[in-house]
Image 1 (cartoon, rainbow, N blue to C red):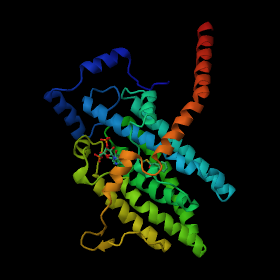
Image 2 (cartoon, protein in one colour):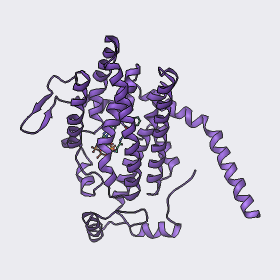
Image 3 (cartoon, helix red, strand yellow):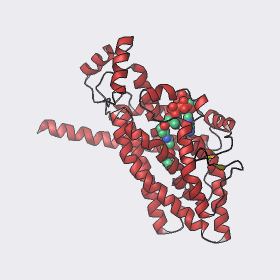
Image 4 (tube, rainbow, N blue to C red):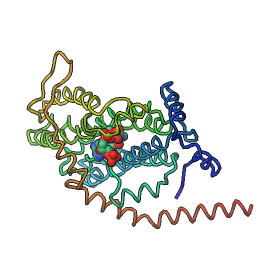
Length: 332
Ligand code: FAQ
């Protein structure tokens, strides 16, 4: 398939020679980071920096692609034509995010085919949130409100990530996520201000998605294996717990405005900290969903495998067309 690794073979070879393993070169790279410089695809970089970015960006891309599935399920059942159009536009945006992100990861030398193969084989991770079911229309509102809301809080700092292609992709992604968050909140608002039955649907959805949304920020700081190195490299700008807290502080007043109750008996405003104290997250559930895919993991991978199989002829047609164009250009 198409590759956006921008380096020529010669450049790749010389970059390989420059693998920054010895302390002096690591120091020089760290000095560039500390100086706030942006690292570009052709720049020399420690192999660990390259690999960690491929890991994070490809997981992020997979999340965008798998994240289309719970919403895609609702396209035919959206309550009005307008809702259907908005939902379709949102799902298309998520596909676009996946594509920018695969492209950004390809600049680091891993092909999109290889990354997708890892997803289909079950080797690659994607966000646990997409392994939860979305059985009601209210869930489509809640996904926009909470899941896109959490994604924005997590991703805005990534617009200043030290790796240029990732940071630039994030600028557009965040703008689109912001529209997604607002459309979700609007759906939930309509339900919360509707009949008692509609409000109950909204509350039930919040009950089911609240805790999994908090898990989107990753394990607590004490259990996060990558945070400290990634913060040193300016890939991450804030820790998982800091961003989670920021999301809670922004979202609780939104729930209160709608007359909905956040399902956390320990949630309490802490005047001294100027922040909400919250209850303990069930980390056993988080790790179990990562390990065995939770309720929907098997279905999600099955759906992606079917899409890959059903799309073979489209990719073959694209390649045949490109080949034909190349032959025409050569003949001209
Ligand atoms: N799910 O050491 P840390 C979206 C893994 S996009 C699954 O803290 P790190 C848009 C982690 O990979 C949502 N695995 O890791 C949308 C690592 O495992 P590894 C996705 C998780 O990288 C909306 C291990 O745990 N967003 O929603 C999760 O420093 C609606 C240890 O963790 C991004 O990917 C999790 N929740 O921090 C689409 C944003 N959390 O690789 C459709 C970019 C952690 O060593 C509809 N990513 N793990 O085997 C990040 O910011 C970071 O990668 C974190 C994790 C914050 C997710």
